[in-house]
Image (cartoon, rainbow, N blue to C red; front, side):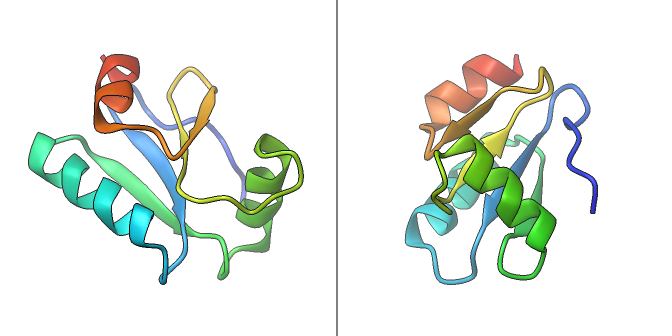
Amino acid sequence: MSISPPDAGTVTMFTTTWCGYCRRLKSQLDRAGIPYAEVDIEAHPDAAEFVMDVNSGNQTVPTVLFPDGSAATNPSLREVQSRVG
């Protein structure tokens, strides 16, 4: 799996199946109509490595990758909306 920034207007969200914060952000993005690609870091070792690189060695989720190549850990809906455009 190659980690590259998503297309404009969307985000990539790195998650786990058991993460409550991930479920909350996904439902907020769904309600706001913001498209996202979800990547389970437990199923994709490359994604887990990316998340660890972004989070000082920690597998903290949700980690969101934006079209400009920047990332945020556990961002608010408002932050995602402002960074997606």
